[in-house]
Image (cartoon, rainbow, N blue to C red; front, side):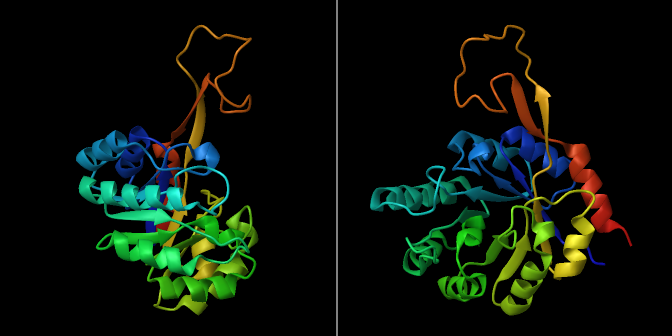
Length: 249
């Protein structure tokens, strides 16, 4: 099996550097992975660009929640694309839906054109559409280069037949990249059963923070893990372990 292109989803500059050191071909850089990823700070993007040679895809998402954006939020996305171009990234990751859950073809196509010459990945907003086959055809018309999908399941390993159908349907018109729930145990199976040529995963571990004092009466956000006294970070050993499975002959 020829090893697929490996993209690691990271939530920090440290994560991007760790993923590249472990052998990742490309990183998807986000902030706030608890929300599914939003646009990271420009300083973070610049540090990653300066200190790694990995392909750098950056999330363009103005907030968490759904993918139905106001006119002002769409303007923010356009301006963030401009900022990322100036920062020298390789591509952007975005997703826009209509009220009925279909792909917002008009806005997506405009944003794809606006992003050129950068690569454009349409992210897992796709997995919130009512008809994946119709959504894929709509997405092809936008000119996006790549689709990240879990096959509309929480864990891609539960929907490999769906992803395989999407890969076959897409042909050479758009790359279909499976992601969500990819681990050392299933990465090879995901590629073999879908025929995908790229794969996406987040190799995250949670460690205690370095804080010695913990205030038991106050939290700075939602009182759910990870909280103030836990740090979620990319584990280079886990990235390497998944790569080893994909490299196995």
